[in-house]
Amino acid sequence: MNFLFITLFPEQIEQAANHSIIKRGMEAGLITVSCINPRDFATDKHKTVDDTPFGGGAGMVLKPEPMVCAIKAAKEKLPNGRVIAMCPGGRTLKQSVVGEYVDSKQDLIFVCGHYEGFDERIFAYVDEKLSIGDYVLTGGELPALVVMDAVARFIPGVLGKLVSAEDDSFSTGLLEYPQYTRPVEFEGMVVPEVLRNGNHAHIERYRRKEALRATYLRRPDLLGELTKNDAKLLEEIKAELAAKNEDNL
Image (cartoon, helix red, strand yellow):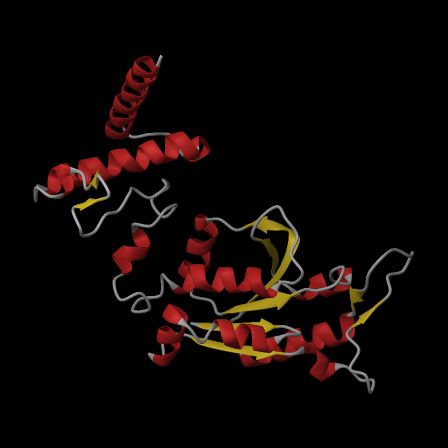
């Protein structure tokens, strides 16, 4: 899969891609990461890519000419690429959106904004707007890198074991269950016995229940419609929490 970033700061992308799982994926030939700088398409001697907004106001706005030229160059390089403008006004990134990108098998072209945003006419050349949350950052590079990281993990071979990605928080619709490793005891805290007894059915039930518990306590909005088994586990969790509250009275 190919990831292309239209960015005024390609070094930020290159540095981020030179580590950990993304780097291994690139070395294995499973993904490519490249950049196009809109300044290369500016026609004045100062390589200007922004200007003051019509109607007045603070800040600067990205000009359509160099940005659109960069998008067209990206589409020539990746004809199948999905052009995504990273901006606060886009739909919010969720695991389901990540799955959509993975399933489409399209290359991804990220248009990274800066300053006060894009000239509105630039959006005529993108496929969608995307946000990673309800806050504003100084540029679109970090959000675009977040999207690449989330998608790359599901490309076969990048993580080594795809099950690692499939079991993560949100992939199952729930937050992740707690994980433990050696030693069995650390400063008085002990790994639950169920994880040490080798009974895989009990382990699976424990992990599902703890994922439900974490989601119920921290992100109940994710629960949605439950299966019969999950509903039974959730009732157990509620009873345990109620009993604990009574003990604390």
